[in-house]
Amino acid sequence: MMAPVAPGGLQGAARILSGLLEARTGQVLSEGRAWRMETALRPVMRAHDLRDIDDLAAQVLRKRHSPLEEDVVNALLNNESSFFRDLQIFDMIHRQILPYIHAERQDRTLRIWSAGCSTGQEAYSLAIRLRNDAARWQGWRIEILATDISTAAIEQARAGVFSQMDVQRGLAVGDLIKWFEPHGEDWRASADLRRMIDFRQDNLFEAQAPHGEYDLILCRNVLLYFNAERRHTVLRLLANHSHAHSVLLLGAGETVIGQGEEFMSHPEFRGGYARKTTLPDCTGGPMRRAG
Ligand SMILES: C[S@@+](CC[C@H](N)C(=O)[O-])C[C@H]1O[C@@H](n2cnc3c(N)ncnc32)[C@H](O)[C@@H]1O
View 1 (cartoon, rainbow, N blue to C red):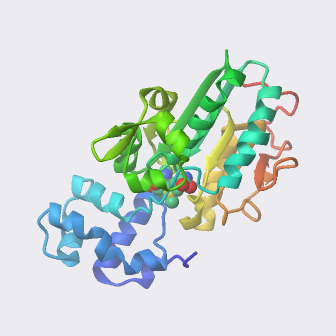
View 2 (view 1 turned 180 degrees about the horizontal axis):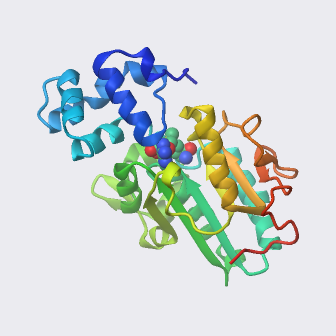
View 3 (view 1 turned 30 degrees about the vertical axis):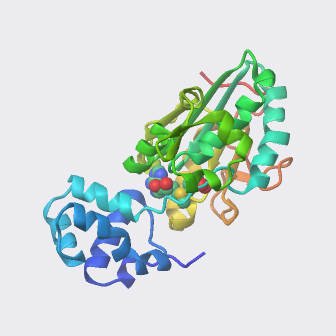
């Protein structure tokens, strides 16, 4: 991973625009993305008929909270994602975590939150695994909430339309044929899959979308570009939406270690995290849900 660049380390227009990104999302640009900033913003400049990055920064300063500002933030966010990203994690979800929740959860309700879901591949991957195992989940109420700050990413996720290149990254041919339909030159997730996921545009620092507790939370490759204080703020939010038996999964390069007191390594699932049961409002006992 490239080191993040504090906006103070950039000059002029780049500093203004990366400052805007940080103020709106908490994300600090990585060194690599800071170098490629102008390239990432070129479509925005074209769409708004702006000469160069200086012109763009000047317009952003002039018009706060405008569609232009939204487009800049969307263009600077790193929305990198793929189906079944880090396959071994999805295998662990399928073989260990979901059976554990299935055995424990007495009210036959499964609640999953994909926090920082980007264009939806993570949530669709989960939905596919669950649908392929439909007999096991017969009679269960399944809720998948998927949130991201990017309006553009959420729009694409909700539409469920993916390019040939997107589907070639991680999706098995059998799943593509079973769960997607040709859509011009692209592929569209079936209505059945789309119905399973509630995609919401939401900022982790002003979260409105999550309600109650989730059995499984994925917040993968999101914390990476937040500073330590913001990472802790997000982990507190995730802890507030967890119960004693919830499983939290982060990205391969992310950890809760040294990031506050809310989570610990999961005793059963390698690479997963569990909410510390010593937290004041934690129920401990068998799986049950507040409210
Ligand atoms: C690199 S993508 C990871 C996508 C997916 N979780 C995965 O691992 O494939 C990170 C996502 O976090 C989102 N994000 C960044 N800051 C956020 C914030 N403050 N609130 C919600 N989402 C945010 C970005 O828009 C981006 O889509």
